[in-house]
Length: 56
Length: 461
Image 1 (cartoon, rainbow over the protein chains, first blue to last red):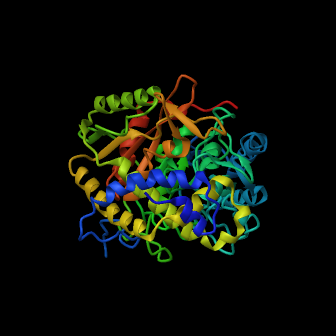
Image 2: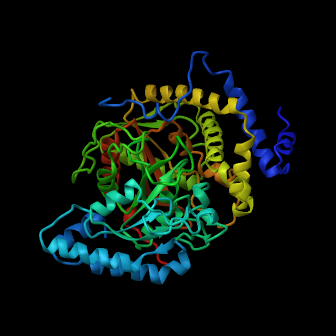
Image 3: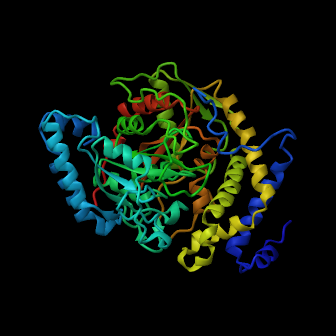
């Protein structure tokens, strides 16, 4: 797991648990998702949303 | 009174715009000290606009359903010459030199601007308990939050201070105050309404829409605001539909999906019961209701949080040297976004595409998805955690749990009143449709509204 306190300090921020604890839980959730990404998937950008465009 | 009713009364000369405006200003004068729903009231500007509307209507110039109707704008919508704070100390003295596209359209339609509504700081939160300008209070219980970030808009509409107020919705900020204040909150499809001139929280999750006292009023608003705007490259070319439901609109044979998982888990019993009652009502009205599996919403919410934290911190990085001007909760979120790796952001955008495809697949077998808007009713000001079924959750994450994901995929959604809990606090029902199917979304919402009286209930404060 990432040491968020260390990263916060490296970025010049106080290692505040109100910042680091939510990041820890988010990392846990998000790590599990990375494996689901299909290799060929490109990122959505705001130019791509919304989806079915008419008249373009 | 709804906008439709007021518009009819104006044309019948039963009331003038000045009278409607004066009534709203009197309500604001009497109640804003308690509710703190407005940050700026433009009384002189409003009365002058009302007089112009009356003169035009008398001369046979009719700009449509908003002509002479008193409205308010959330304080993220730029108003030329009128302070626009975004609920932030950073912008406490900001007076824009331009109008937002939404501001322009209301002005061209002859609407009367009463002022700017209060909000969560920088639209980055769900309580509207603003550390700089004080908390907005819920007119149903002054000790409770109105939801957010468009809390002032929800409170103002519920308290009859205006006929409509605009909101912005990045992770539920229109729908949550709609649910908590017993008003209608519409989040259109991403790109349906121009974001030009709206102070951003996020690049790809921000949506603009109305809070109103009826579904048809929300539809009238969408009719006014929808359409391509060259100044917002994300605004859509999709044709503008006819959104306002007819009287007696039917939902017969509409395919309504009820999620088999997530949306009714960890929800207060009164909330779940009220929403399920509305599902039964829909079935009774002829809709084809079926239980459907849904994509992994917890995962979608995690994706949404990564995107929002990253993009919002990118938006506000330029103010990083003014940390003392951020409130504690917003500063915490800002710092979180500054620490996330870029790879997480890119991968969240890749996952977003996959989840969007899963939802498009789901909507091949249904027309609408029905869920609670929030898992609870409005909670007390200052509460940072809530407990449902013995499980404690962060209030912000819990409150956005059922709405945030829909911003990630950009689908349209609406919250409508659907009941009250044992403490007489309002409950909201969320309907979600496929992209650009607002006509169907609003028709279904109107049919449910027509069959109930919840939206007619008003707070006494």
